[in-house]
Length: 528
Image (cartoon, rainbow, N blue to C red):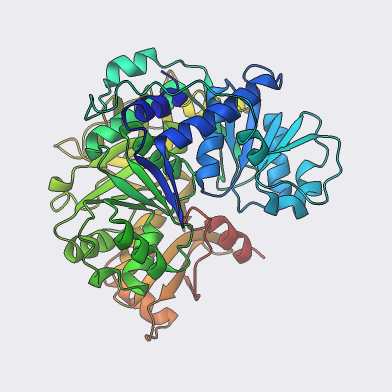
């Protein structure tokens, strides 16, 4: 099984069911399948090399879905590009992966010169509406021309329609049959330097998607509000899980206006909401989220970084009748590694839960040896979900992939029942005056303060301590606080060496388009 097959299977069973809703547009499984197949056939006719890379620079939309399945169906390697990147970073990714085709929104035409600078591998541009002023040598077609062309597509075999109520996947069987050839390269923003390309195979993505569908109990009756970008691995997981089970993607790119998204959730009667910690904090602190009934909503999922226990408790108290899945993963793990079953969340607050099906987790020392229950060490992961490696970065790859195990860089412990708890990240351990301090622990302490809406913590150079703790916080509306008050609050809960030496107050934390806090920007600003 390949990624395209998941769409074809759902289209055969539910051809007239909606697969995506976007603003005033709706797309059925038949329509998505036929458009993806037509674009796929066009790509196959263009003579790209087998396994050639095709990049997508498109915001969440039905066009993105079409391009996603067309590229992976044509035997090309998908390269989703962060639409918030500057032209120079996009240019780096295109050149680094050697993309032969770029499927792009015409709104980026004004940056095209910088995006394409020095590129010798690119052969073709496919845009949504065409370019007004492009006069380059590259072949340039519009997606509309391709999809409305006279070329015929093979009729959809919908013989399963009405005969199969639920689409069933066997994790072990389907994973074994999914090829290990490269399917996609997801570039991660990383904490420093240039983006790294994470190579994921069809097997990586399919095995992890089936396991996620399984523990979320997803079916064709489910629909999810999509506020996370599809180029982000968490957003990609929403795409694949719902296509796989015959569910619906309700796309809304307007999270800057939370009330609009909440209205969409109610109007479309979505059953699921998925977000990163900042999404939940914004909804809880700056919207009518807590007063909405959201009667159709069955579950929440959270990943993309640790969510403070205090925020988890608030979410549980606000929506006691909803299932809440706290999850953990990495792009390198396609992405899901663990989840906390909702029925255990109350007594396991702070835990990232247990391994998803088909995944093994162990806690290891610096030399890779598994350590006893209760002791702190690095999370290592093994399974069909573990990436093939980093594109063109063998040295970086060798540091994290050892004997088939992915060494995540996250520090954690395991309790007696096999539940895992993250205590920090190797790169975010602050060495203040010889003491090791977890930035995560300090962040969680600050967030327990009723005046704080958001907080992030990191280390900065210090002449006396070597490295000092700095906190950047956002206050809730209508309250005031100063540095001393925050320090006093922390001192009542933590050892003196864990107290932030510096505290900055800002109106908002800088974030990537995925919603994750951009610590690198804050660190760079602090070092000037």
